[in-house]
Length: 152
Image (spheres, rainbow, N blue to C red):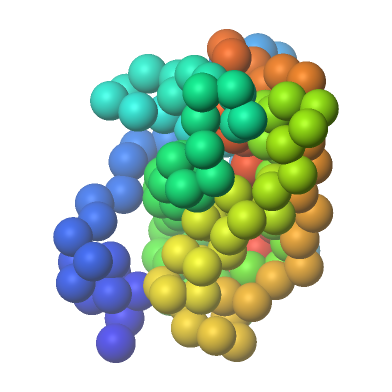
């Protein structure tokens, strides 16, 4: 099944590339690696504001991470033209806006990791990963994620 067919079966339409909010580009390709800039969580087209451990729970954070993963695929598609060219999701880095006592950043980030495995399969979707708790994310968003992919 093609990636487009897989996304359709999940009821997902990829968004266009977001306009950068500062002095950077949404993606850079060097050789077979594509580096995607950090994407923040959005809900109803606006930053998904909140802090994990203070009003937002792990499950809601996981939903936010999944939403970011969908946005990241929109950017990746714009970068390479066809998601079927993805050989592997190599690395995911997640920044979780959280209180000092919140310790489930890794579970929040699973929202993105599990989505990539669902779309690309257990081999292409499996990746190295870091998940950090941070004091703040741009615009007060609850999660920010960046991605590195290997392409044909």
